[in-house]
Image (tube, rainbow, N blue to C red; front, side, top):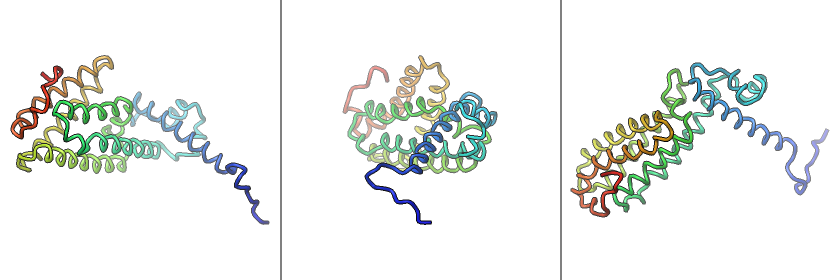
Length: 226
C-alpha cells in the first residue's frame, strides 16, 4: 500500500506533533528530576519519586527513560551544555579591556547566577554515585575551563611569567569553587553578601599583580572590594 502523502501547506504531520509532545514530556521529567535530586540527592532519588514529582505514572516515565541513570545523564548533558555556554560568555577576551573590579563582575556574576538558577548542577557534578559519563564530561569541561582562565589571565597579566600566571589561575579557580560552595549553602537572602565577599577576596589577591602590570589604575577600587 502506498504511503499517504502530506500537503506541504497543510501544516506539520501528526508524527511531528507527537514528537513535540514527547519533547515537552522529556523536559517535564527532567525538571522533575532536577527538583528531586536537589531535595533528596541523586542516590536517594528514585524513578517513582521523579514520576510523582512530574505528575505522571512510572510507566509514562519508562517510555522515555529506562532508569534513573539515563535521566541523570540526559539532565547532566543539558546542564553541562548550558554551563559551557555561560562560562564561554563570561571568560571572553573582550573583558580584558575592563578594569579589574568590572572584570570580576563580568566573570563572576553570570557564573554565580547560573548556579543559583540550576541548583541540580552541583548535585549532579559533585554528588556521590553519579554516573561515570556525567563525571567524565564534567572533568573534561573543568579542565577546559581552567585552561580558559589561564589564557585570560595570561593575556591580562602579560608582563607576568606564564608559570606564575598558571599558578595564580589554579589558585583563583580553587578559591572561586570554595566561594561558590559557601554562596550556594548560604540563606538566599545572604547570597549577594557572600558574592561580594568572594569578589573582595579575588580583588585583593589580583590587585598587586594588576598594579605590577599597570592595570589596576584603570579604575578606583570598588567600595564592595575595599
